[in-house]
Length: 399
Image (spheres, rainbow, N blue to C red):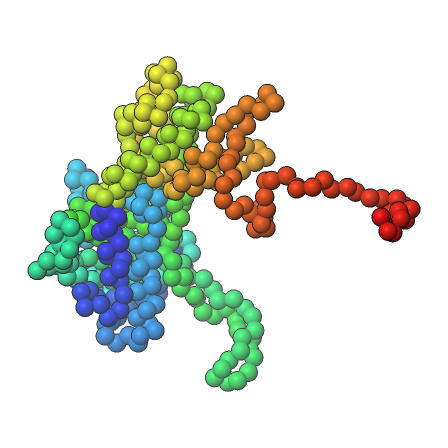
């Protein structure tokens, strides 16, 4: 599922969309207690009965379930055909997206299993939407042509439920200020976890893959991924970034020289731009990464140790390229100084030895601000003389 396909589905998630039909919504509230999930509420919602305000609240959850960055907190997983549990889950999901999940007893059982295997210790709210999208046919220029294909999919999300805060509230109904106690649970619209099944690829359903969303890239729900989806967990974006940094530190004990580091950033950004039209997440393997370093000017004697270090630290896994650089900018940090430079400004930076010290020299050709204040690097036009008060008293007023 590439970036354009993901954006296309996101754009459809809105009320009164003629191309998208919301067949039904399921919701459940429960928590994990005493080694099992307790489902306290479950129901099916007919979208036709919702008010405009209610409809917008549900669509907000569905849209946020597909929010984030591919390769970071949006990760595509495939079902392992060698694992009987994964094969059975794929069959179940296939039936679910066609409408089987819209039965209360089915969804209650599904919600209970998801809460248990996801190891949710606090109260959570589960919602599922079953959709049918009439996807228009596109030509090579991505222009709509006659005809369309039907893409049936489901979005399932798990949201946190929090006690409302104790405090004073003004009631417009009773025209009075009242003290409100925490008897209600507020549903947080940004899901803790969510998934889309099946993914939308090449204008059709890919029933062999799902798209998993986690609220933060650093804290995916490993229990849910491994125990519920039955797929091996992939390292997080931050873990990939840290692992690659360890490889560079070992292969280049003194660190990448400035020129090589800048070239690597540019080459990696170019590679992402070239490949991202076809793939949602552009990945680099060990061989590609070595080639990029070589093309960036890394010394051959350093690269001799690259393969062994990569294998030992990263276990030869493919890395999401987006996790290896900051999009559109480069950050440079030392213990006391931190600067950030946009890609368009990298040519304005160079290294230079000044008074025997290695320095970064930044050309300032545009307007400069320091702490949001207008500033300049030019020397003052005239000399500033500081006059002591006692000297000022002795000066001739006419001078």
